[in-house]
Image 1 (cartoon, helix red, strand yellow):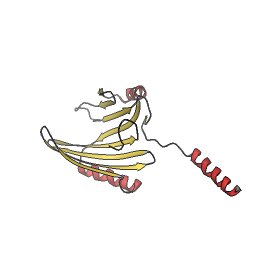
Image 2 (cartoon, helix red, strand yellow):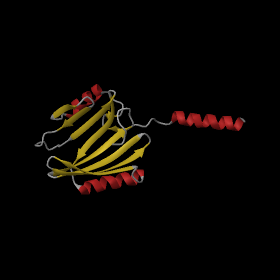
Image 3 (tube, helix red, strand yellow):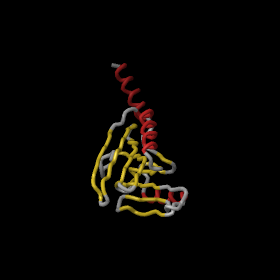
Image 4 (spheres, one colour):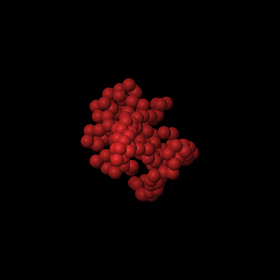
Length: 165
């Protein structure tokens, strides 16, 4: 009986000392309030910061800016639950990012291939997601009739929508 109690106490202690999972990208980490994200964004000097509905914030540079940054923050109940960062769109970059994530986290947890029709033609999406603890990391490649988009995403489970998406 003493061995079972000791084993239980050791396991409970180990679980209590494990670090809390949560992604952190630069100054941005899941669970931040919208005000904290807006405060952190002030140091980044984006050309524009716009609200996206009630639960989003889009920070970007104008097309003539050499930085070309585009960040999308999604909130649930006032807390940051998702961060998307666009990168230079190229299928080669998608392959490199997906390969790096596969080397780090194994096979993807979820793959989302979709095709749909938008106003100016066909839209094709290929998204792949990996999981580490409660975090989802992903890469999304979208091919539009007039261009392409590549973004990396970090998400956590929340009460507003099912992660990953």
